[in-house]
Length: 158
Ligand code: SF4
Image (tube, rainbow, N blue to C red; front, side, top):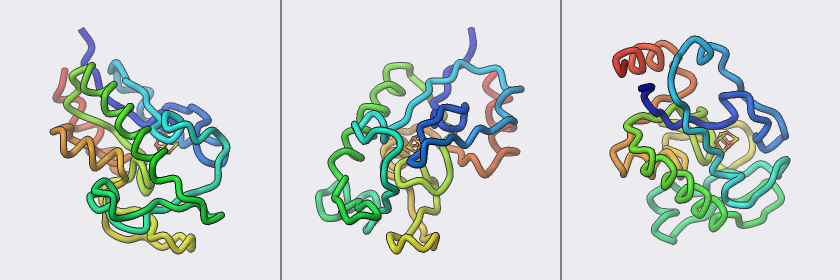
C-alpha cells in the first residue's frame, strides 16, 4: 500500500494560489505516494484568485488570538486562515500522515521563512499557520524549496 503524505495542492499543479496560478513541482512526478492534497486558504473560504496576505506576528501568537493576517488591501483574514488550516490538518490526521510537503514562504504553508507583512517580498523567520499546526501535531514538514530532502525522506517511507 502506498504511504500517505500531505501536500500543498499548488505543488501538484492545482491553480489555487492567490493569483490563480500554481507552483507545480515537477520533481514530485517521480515520487510514488498517495498525496493528501490540501489548500488551507481555499478551505478557509478565501476563494481563488484572492488578495495576497501576510502575517503580522508569528503563527503561535496569531493562533492565541493576539495577532492578525492582513491582505494587501488591509482586510483582516485571520479567521479564514485559521479555519482553513484546521480543516486541512483534520484531513491529514484522519489519513494518519506523518509527513507533509509544503509550499515555501506562504502564510499558510511556509516553513522557516515567511513574508514579513510589509508586502515588499521581505522574509522573516517563522512558519505559516498550517505548517505550525502540522508541527504541533507531530507531522514532519518539508519545504518545497528542499527537493533533495523531499526525495531522501520520502524514499525511506517505502
Ligand atoms: S501555498 Fe498553501 S495555501 Fe497557498 S496556494 Fe498553495 S496550498 Fe494553497
